[in-house]
Figure 1 (tube, rainbow, N blue to C red):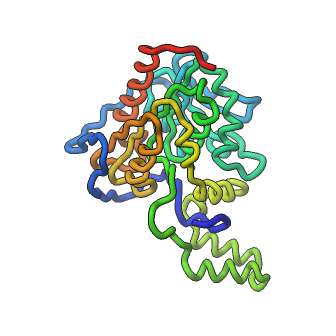
Figure 2: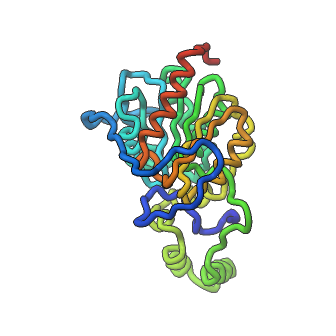
Figure 3: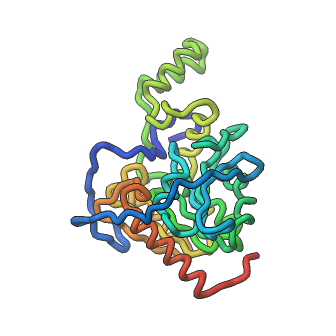
Length: 299
Protein backbone atom coordinates (compact mmCIF):
# COMPACT_ATOMS: atom_id res chain seq x y z
CA UNK A 1 0.00 0.00 0.00
CA UNK A 2 1.51 3.33 -1.07
CA UNK A 3 1.63 6.47 1.10
CA UNK A 4 -1.49 8.59 0.86
CA UNK A 5 -3.82 5.68 0.15
CA UNK A 6 -6.83 5.05 2.27
CA UNK A 7 -6.27 2.36 4.87
CA UNK A 8 -7.80 -0.61 3.13
CA UNK A 9 -5.41 -2.74 5.17
CA UNK A 10 -5.78 -2.71 8.93
CA UNK A 11 -4.18 -2.99 12.31
CA UNK A 12 -7.62 -4.17 13.35
CA UNK A 13 -8.07 -5.33 16.90
CA UNK A 14 -11.74 -6.12 16.52
CA UNK A 15 -12.34 -9.86 16.78
CA UNK A 16 -13.88 -11.38 13.63
CA UNK A 17 -17.10 -13.33 13.78
CA UNK A 18 -15.56 -16.37 12.11
CA UNK A 19 -12.11 -17.89 12.15
CA UNK A 20 -10.16 -19.68 9.48
CA UNK A 21 -7.49 -22.25 10.23
CA UNK A 22 -4.59 -22.27 7.78
CA UNK A 23 -1.62 -24.55 8.24
CA UNK A 24 0.84 -23.56 10.98
CA UNK A 25 4.02 -21.71 10.05
CA UNK A 26 7.44 -22.82 11.18
CA UNK A 27 8.47 -22.35 14.78
CA UNK A 28 7.28 -23.72 18.09
CA UNK A 29 3.70 -24.95 17.80
CA UNK A 30 1.28 -24.64 20.70
CA UNK A 31 -1.66 -26.96 20.19
CA UNK A 32 -5.09 -25.42 20.01
CA UNK A 33 -6.87 -28.80 20.25
CA UNK A 34 -9.54 -28.71 22.93
CA UNK A 35 -7.86 -25.63 24.36
CA UNK A 36 -9.35 -24.46 27.63
CA UNK A 37 -8.45 -20.90 28.43
CA UNK A 38 -7.33 -20.38 32.01
CA UNK A 39 -8.63 -17.01 33.17
CA UNK A 40 -6.06 -14.74 34.79
CA UNK A 41 -6.37 -14.23 38.54
CA UNK A 42 -9.25 -11.89 39.42
CA UNK A 43 -8.09 -8.41 40.27
CA UNK A 44 -10.24 -5.40 41.17
CA UNK A 45 -10.54 -2.78 38.42
CA UNK A 46 -7.45 -0.56 38.60
CA UNK A 47 -7.56 3.18 39.03
CA UNK A 48 -5.97 4.95 36.08
CA UNK A 49 -2.90 7.03 36.75
CA UNK A 50 -1.66 9.98 34.69
CA UNK A 51 1.81 9.90 33.15
CA UNK A 52 3.87 12.29 31.04
CA UNK A 53 2.08 15.37 32.31
CA UNK A 54 -1.38 13.94 31.77
CA UNK A 55 -0.76 12.98 28.14
CA UNK A 56 -0.88 9.23 28.84
CA UNK A 57 -3.06 7.30 31.27
CA UNK A 58 -2.59 3.75 32.42
CA UNK A 59 -3.28 1.12 35.05
CA UNK A 60 -0.48 -0.13 37.25
CA UNK A 61 -0.31 -3.41 39.14
CA UNK A 62 2.29 -4.61 41.62
CA UNK A 63 3.88 -1.43 42.94
CA UNK A 64 4.85 1.96 41.58
CA UNK A 65 7.61 0.81 39.23
CA UNK A 66 7.00 -2.62 37.71
CA UNK A 67 9.26 -3.97 34.98
CA UNK A 68 6.60 -4.84 32.38
CA UNK A 69 5.01 -2.30 30.04
CA UNK A 70 1.92 -3.22 28.01
CA UNK A 71 1.10 -1.49 24.70
CA UNK A 72 -2.30 -2.38 23.21
CA UNK A 73 -3.51 -2.68 19.64
CA UNK A 74 -5.32 -0.23 17.36
CA UNK A 75 -8.78 0.76 18.55
CA UNK A 76 -8.26 -0.91 21.93
CA UNK A 77 -7.13 0.32 25.36
CA UNK A 78 -5.11 -0.69 28.41
CA UNK A 79 -7.66 -3.24 29.59
CA UNK A 80 -6.64 -5.86 27.00
CA UNK A 81 -3.14 -6.29 28.37
CA UNK A 82 -4.04 -5.47 31.96
CA UNK A 83 -6.44 -8.42 31.90
CA UNK A 84 -4.07 -10.72 30.00
CA UNK A 85 -1.11 -10.02 32.29
CA UNK A 86 -3.21 -10.51 35.42
CA UNK A 87 -1.12 -10.41 38.61
CA UNK A 88 2.23 -10.00 36.83
CA UNK A 89 3.42 -6.56 38.00
CA UNK A 90 2.96 -4.25 35.04
CA UNK A 91 1.91 -0.91 33.66
CA UNK A 92 -0.65 -1.06 30.84
CA UNK A 93 -1.23 2.28 29.15
CA UNK A 94 -3.82 3.84 26.91
CA UNK A 95 -1.78 4.91 23.90
CA UNK A 96 -2.30 8.52 22.77
CA UNK A 97 -5.57 8.71 20.86
CA UNK A 98 -7.12 5.66 22.56
CA UNK A 99 -9.03 5.11 25.77
CA UNK A 100 -8.53 8.03 28.13
CA UNK A 101 -5.32 9.37 26.57
CA UNK A 102 -5.71 12.45 24.33
CA UNK A 103 -4.74 12.13 20.65
CA UNK A 104 -1.37 13.27 19.33
CA UNK A 105 -1.10 16.91 18.21
CA UNK A 106 -0.09 15.87 14.69
CA UNK A 107 0.21 12.82 12.44
CA UNK A 108 2.52 10.47 14.30
CA UNK A 109 4.17 7.29 13.11
CA UNK A 110 5.35 4.49 15.37
CA UNK A 111 8.69 6.24 15.88
CA UNK A 112 6.91 9.37 17.14
CA UNK A 113 4.84 7.33 19.57
CA UNK A 114 8.02 5.65 20.80
CA UNK A 115 9.81 8.96 21.27
CA UNK A 116 6.84 10.28 23.24
CA UNK A 117 6.67 7.19 25.47
CA UNK A 118 10.42 6.80 25.97
CA UNK A 119 10.54 8.85 29.23
CA UNK A 120 7.93 6.48 30.65
CA UNK A 121 10.52 3.69 30.68
CA UNK A 122 12.53 5.64 33.24
CA UNK A 123 9.59 5.54 35.65
CA UNK A 124 9.70 1.73 35.65
CA UNK A 125 12.20 -0.80 36.98
CA UNK A 126 14.84 -1.21 34.31
CA UNK A 127 15.41 -3.20 32.22
CA UNK A 128 11.79 -3.37 31.07
CA UNK A 129 9.98 -6.15 29.24
CA UNK A 130 7.61 -4.55 26.73
CA UNK A 131 4.52 -6.46 25.64
CA UNK A 132 3.19 -5.14 22.33
CA UNK A 133 0.04 -6.32 20.59
CA UNK A 134 -0.56 -5.30 16.97
CA UNK A 135 -0.17 -1.49 16.74
CA UNK A 136 1.45 -1.44 20.18
CA UNK A 137 4.14 -3.80 18.90
CA UNK A 138 5.05 -1.31 16.18
CA UNK A 139 5.90 1.15 18.94
CA UNK A 140 7.66 -1.49 21.03
CA UNK A 141 10.21 -2.30 18.31
CA UNK A 142 11.15 1.37 18.04
CA UNK A 143 11.57 1.62 21.82
CA UNK A 144 13.78 -1.48 21.88
CA UNK A 145 15.91 -0.22 19.00
CA UNK A 146 16.29 3.26 20.49
CA UNK A 147 16.75 2.25 24.17
CA UNK A 148 18.71 -1.02 24.21
CA UNK A 149 19.90 -0.51 27.77
CA UNK A 150 16.41 0.15 29.08
CA UNK A 151 14.57 -2.65 27.26
CA UNK A 152 15.52 -6.14 28.38
CA UNK A 153 13.03 -8.08 26.30
CA UNK A 154 10.07 -7.88 23.95
CA UNK A 155 6.94 -10.00 23.72
CA UNK A 156 5.19 -9.28 20.43
CA UNK A 157 1.84 -10.67 19.30
CA UNK A 158 0.16 -10.12 15.95
CA UNK A 159 2.31 -7.17 14.93
CA UNK A 160 2.44 -6.13 11.23
CA UNK A 161 6.22 -5.76 11.42
CA UNK A 162 6.87 -6.13 7.69
CA UNK A 163 4.94 -5.56 4.49
CA UNK A 164 3.27 -8.66 3.12
CA UNK A 165 5.07 -10.44 0.33
CA UNK A 166 3.61 -10.36 -3.14
CA UNK A 167 1.48 -7.74 -4.80
CA UNK A 168 0.31 -5.03 -2.38
CA UNK A 169 -3.39 -4.77 -1.70
CA UNK A 170 -4.92 -1.95 -3.72
CA UNK A 171 -8.02 0.10 -2.94
CA UNK A 172 -11.09 -0.60 -5.11
CA UNK A 173 -11.05 0.87 -8.61
CA UNK A 174 -13.91 3.24 -7.86
CA UNK A 175 -12.03 4.68 -4.91
CA UNK A 176 -8.84 5.11 -6.96
CA UNK A 177 -10.81 6.89 -9.68
CA UNK A 178 -12.45 9.17 -7.13
CA UNK A 179 -9.09 9.99 -5.59
CA UNK A 180 -7.68 10.94 -9.00
CA UNK A 181 -10.70 13.14 -9.74
CA UNK A 182 -10.41 14.76 -6.32
CA UNK A 183 -6.77 15.64 -6.96
CA UNK A 184 -7.87 17.31 -10.20
CA UNK A 185 -10.52 19.29 -8.36
CA UNK A 186 -13.38 17.58 -10.21
CA UNK A 187 -15.09 16.14 -7.13
CA UNK A 188 -15.55 17.90 -3.79
CA UNK A 189 -13.91 17.20 -0.44
CA UNK A 190 -17.24 16.02 0.95
CA UNK A 191 -17.66 13.51 -1.87
CA UNK A 192 -14.11 12.27 -1.29
CA UNK A 193 -14.92 11.82 2.39
CA UNK A 194 -17.94 9.74 1.40
CA UNK A 195 -15.71 7.48 -0.70
CA UNK A 196 -13.27 7.07 2.18
CA UNK A 197 -16.14 6.13 4.48
CA UNK A 198 -17.44 3.59 1.98
CA UNK A 199 -14.22 1.93 0.89
CA UNK A 200 -11.91 2.40 3.88
CA UNK A 201 -11.28 -0.36 6.41
CA UNK A 202 -13.42 -0.63 9.52
CA UNK A 203 -10.52 0.84 11.50
CA UNK A 204 -10.38 3.78 9.12
CA UNK A 205 -14.13 4.39 9.26
CA UNK A 206 -14.17 4.33 13.04
CA UNK A 207 -11.12 6.58 13.45
CA UNK A 208 -11.71 10.30 13.75
CA UNK A 209 -9.65 13.42 13.16
CA UNK A 210 -5.90 13.00 13.22
CA UNK A 211 -6.22 9.30 14.06
CA UNK A 212 -7.31 8.53 10.50
CA UNK A 213 -4.10 9.97 9.11
CA UNK A 214 -2.10 8.18 11.78
CA UNK A 215 -3.66 4.88 10.72
CA UNK A 216 -2.79 5.48 7.07
CA UNK A 217 0.78 6.32 8.08
CA UNK A 218 1.07 3.25 10.31
CA UNK A 219 -0.13 0.70 7.77
CA UNK A 220 2.46 1.97 5.30
CA UNK A 221 5.37 1.45 7.70
CA UNK A 222 7.76 -1.50 7.76
CA UNK A 223 10.44 -2.14 10.38
CA UNK A 224 13.33 -4.07 8.84
CA UNK A 225 15.92 -1.56 10.06
CA UNK A 226 14.55 -1.49 13.59
CA UNK A 227 14.39 -5.28 13.83
CA UNK A 228 18.03 -5.59 12.80
CA UNK A 229 19.06 -3.09 15.51
CA UNK A 230 17.28 -4.83 18.38
CA UNK A 231 19.69 -6.66 20.68
CA UNK A 232 17.37 -7.89 23.44
CA UNK A 233 15.62 -11.28 23.30
CA UNK A 234 12.27 -11.21 21.51
CA UNK A 235 9.33 -13.59 21.97
CA UNK A 236 7.05 -13.73 18.92
CA UNK A 237 3.64 -15.15 19.89
CA UNK A 238 1.49 -15.68 16.80
CA UNK A 239 -1.76 -17.34 15.87
CA UNK A 240 -1.59 -19.45 12.72
CA UNK A 241 -5.03 -18.09 11.75
CA UNK A 242 -4.02 -14.43 12.12
CA UNK A 243 -5.21 -12.69 8.97
CA UNK A 244 -4.30 -9.13 10.03
CA UNK A 245 -0.63 -10.05 10.51
CA UNK A 246 -0.03 -13.55 9.08
CA UNK A 247 2.44 -15.85 10.80
CA UNK A 248 4.64 -15.68 7.69
CA UNK A 249 5.45 -12.11 8.75
CA UNK A 250 6.61 -13.39 12.13
CA UNK A 251 8.83 -15.99 10.43
CA UNK A 252 10.48 -13.30 8.31
CA UNK A 253 10.89 -11.04 11.34
CA UNK A 254 12.51 -13.88 13.29
CA UNK A 255 15.23 -14.12 10.65
CA UNK A 256 16.05 -10.42 11.06
CA UNK A 257 16.26 -10.45 14.84
CA UNK A 258 19.47 -11.26 16.70
CA UNK A 259 17.75 -13.29 19.43
CA UNK A 260 14.19 -14.40 18.75
CA UNK A 261 11.86 -17.26 19.60
CA UNK A 262 8.73 -17.80 17.51
CA UNK A 263 5.78 -19.62 19.04
CA UNK A 264 2.90 -20.32 16.65
CA UNK A 265 -0.45 -21.06 18.28
CA UNK A 266 -2.51 -23.63 16.41
CA UNK A 267 -5.94 -22.21 15.63
CA UNK A 268 -4.88 -18.95 17.24
CA UNK A 269 -6.17 -15.66 15.86
CA UNK A 270 -4.97 -12.04 15.87
CA UNK A 271 -6.31 -11.30 19.32
CA UNK A 272 -3.88 -13.21 21.51
CA UNK A 273 -4.30 -11.06 24.65
CA UNK A 274 -8.04 -11.75 24.55
CA UNK A 275 -8.20 -15.33 23.31
CA UNK A 276 -4.88 -16.91 24.36
CA UNK A 277 -3.58 -14.98 27.39
CA UNK A 278 -1.92 -18.08 28.86
CA UNK A 279 0.63 -18.22 26.04
CA UNK A 280 1.23 -14.49 26.28
CA UNK A 281 1.80 -14.61 30.03
CA UNK A 282 4.12 -17.61 29.69
CA UNK A 283 6.30 -15.64 27.27
CA UNK A 284 6.43 -12.67 29.65
CA UNK A 285 7.42 -14.94 32.54
CA UNK A 286 10.20 -16.47 30.41
CA UNK A 287 11.62 -13.03 29.74
CA UNK A 288 11.36 -11.94 33.38
CA UNK A 289 12.99 -15.17 34.59
CA UNK A 290 15.83 -14.73 32.11
CA UNK A 291 16.44 -11.18 33.31
CA UNK A 292 16.40 -12.30 36.93
CA UNK A 293 18.91 -15.05 36.18
CA UNK A 294 21.32 -12.70 34.42
CA UNK A 295 20.88 -9.25 35.98
CA UNK A 296 22.69 -6.30 34.51
CA UNK A 297 22.81 -2.58 34.97
CA UNK A 298 20.77 -0.62 32.39
CA UNK A 299 22.66 1.97 30.41
